Length: 179
Image (tube, rainbow, N blue to C red):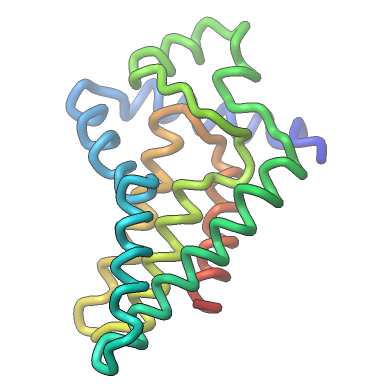
């Protein structure tokens, strides 16, 4: 798929983040929030879900979490990322000194795979939606909010385009509902 049709949109969002939002404080905030979409958080959540399945009181929650993670991860990493093979923004914009200055200020994170869809956003939404649907509605709204913040943190850190995050939201919501 040719993503170049989104170039001006993606760059305008990067420009907004780079010129209006970036600060040392926001770097710390983004680093903290992005953790909730990473494997260091998601894998233990999936393991906890698997441990909960044998127990009647926690079975529904455990199954929702485990299957959401499995569905979202399998769709994103072995299927969609290789299929679309979109380069990361810091690879695509490597010759753009303004973008690279924002990227370096945000921490110059190097990721190991392709860009579309955002795996962190997928993971955050698969968990957030599954937990929203499986838990008490009075407080469960917080999980999709955290998921949205994870997506924004990935853009802020300049490791994903807006369209990658949108793709991650779609896959994550699907996986969360299916879980």
